Image (tube, rainbow, N blue to C red; front, top):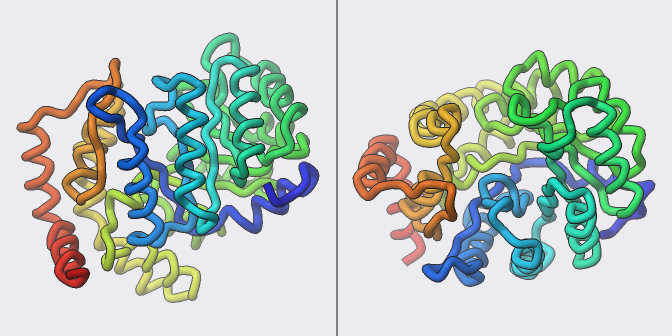
Length: 330
């Protein structure tokens, strides 16, 4: 950690910029953390996709299936693989506030840049309860803490609660999983001058930059929509930041076929109540990354479904870009 507790908000404004990704963890056939596979995936997003930062141990990493010791080891491995090339966020989500604090303290001690903490899902049904949870953690660690708003699954961190939480010295950013532009606007009006805000979906990213002035996207789509040599999210982001909105809009619009597949294979399952981590890992494998098995109660993808997904991805042209990159690398 390169800043004091009182400097967390300024550090977040300086560091939390650009395109960040989040990835599922890979497990071995023996259901252990696959160090080699996870290192390879991290290297892929840094060297191949030129990602600006990474969020470890999120929902899609099956954090809730991991013993604390395994999560801490995962953080050590992923941090070691980056070798300081990109900043990192550690997911320290836990129902137990003591365990969340312990995970945050570990991330702080080994050198993570920030931590992110979901609201708890038991005994946390009003603003006072949520505030007390984050206050407990904030008082015991110095590292910057990112709020993660995930309605309707958990109690929403709305504008009034966000304003209260922003008074804690090391609450420094806010990940907005509510897809409503009105909800994002309300949050920005409440705390946009204090905390860095990211939407949790790529689809509204261009609008978020051009209309809301957001500087940071953290989401799992950058490594699903891009391959080495074909970086449309990065390209339209840079075009928008350079003021070329026409070019940015054209590049962003070209992603519609991939967004449609996301709606089919990822978001469609998610809306039905099933976590599509098997589908995410299959998508990664089709693109040459590591995926591997899932842990119960998550269900694996069937061989038939994976074959259909590969056909769908081929129809978008993404696999052609992947082949071109492989030929160029030979």
